[in-house]
Image (cartoon, rainbow, N blue to C red):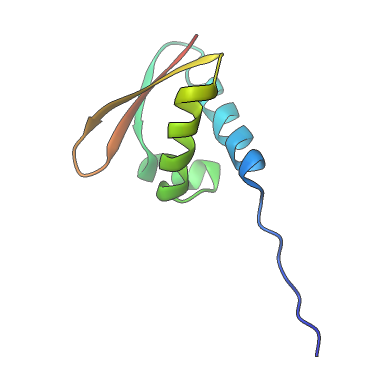
Length: 81
C-alpha cells in the first residue's frame, strides 16, 4: 500500500501570495481588513493570514503593516511604503 501526500504550499509561498495581494490592494492608498474577509481571495485560513501579517509587519520593506484594532478579529492597516 502506498501513501500519497499532497504537498502544501510552503510558508514562503504563502507569504509571497499574501504580500502580492496586499501590494495590489494598497496601490491606491491604505487599506483596512480582517483576515477572515480576505481568506478566500488569497487561499489561506484567517489564522494563517494573522501569523503571516505579524511576519510581514517586521520584514516587508515595501509595505507599512500595522495591527490597527481588535474587535472580534484583528483589523490590519496596510499601505504601500
